[in-house]
Amino acid sequence: MGNIIQIKELSKSYFKKQALNHISLNVEQGKVIGILGPNGSGKTTLIKIITGILRQSKGEILVDGKVPGAATKAVVSYLPDRNFLYKWMNVQEAIGFYKDFYSDFDEQKAYELLDFMKLGKRMKVNSLSKGMTEKLNLTLVLSRKAKVYVLDEPIAGVDPVARDQILDAIIKNYNTDSTMLVTTHLVRDMENIFDDVIFLRDGQIVLQGNAEMLREERGMQIDDLYKNIFGE
Amino acid sequence: MNFNENLPIYMQIMNVIKKRIVIGELKEGEKLPSVRELSAELKVNPNTIQRSYQELEREGLVFTQRGMGTFVTEEKDITNKLKDHMASAIVNHFIIEMKALGFDLKKMIELVKERESGGE
Image (cartoon, rainbow over all chains, first blue to last red; front, top):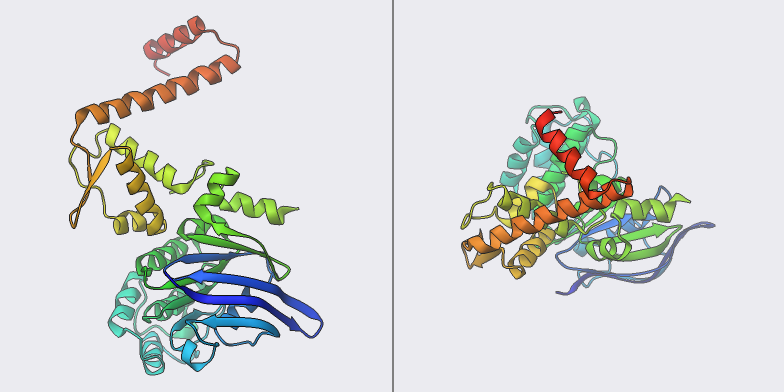
């Protein structure tokens, strides 16, 4: 299968701070990729460049063969690391909002997912708990028929039950035509859904590979490997 | 489910399925859950489950019927052999650990017998 994302020597700096430092990366279609690293390692910057929200300072990036912009936003479904819905909306309105915005939005699927997440149509966005907000946002993001899903910290700060529901939703909606990029520092909870993992530190890739091969080679789970790399 | 051993996940899943076969939870000729179902149940990437099924097939424990799914082998020899194999792995482990504690074989047998007759 082809590479849906191609990144060559990508760098990004904010004034003097170097957030990404010469990153090269190819992401195959149909894979679930974990982008792992502590806070400040460059995960969110990388994702924002992939989703076309930020521009790189140097280097090249192609998503579905194109420079990130309006055309790639149409095929990339992005879950930011914070709530992106207007507070005055209720759940049903939020779904309508997404439907208007994205032509690949599958309304029926959204309502199915909503049921699965045990969220009501009439609930107000500003009355939702953190876990419920996350579930609503994920429902919207997964209801698009996108080529690439980019999930930034999808389970941060939610309780274990909601966490399981979110993982279930991700697994059930993953299909081999689409690619998922997931950032997390909660490696233990998520590592079993990854095909490949990328470890980021100080804006550089320190290790990458197939998760099962790494487990076999190193004789440990990815979570332990993470602690080895970032522990000292 | 937690995968804590220092083994790739696909191997740990193979062990789970082997155990289900040995204790009869999965019978000879019975259909295994689909890759999708098991992936959702264990919260594991479907590609990993697929790998487990392929390896189990290579070992002759399951077979795939195109368009139908994956089934436990109908050959009793193979499942019996699997049971013996798993039992001897447990016994080996027991002996190694007990030896490390300084027990000889005679003491071990005494302890096992005692345990059997004395309950807890």
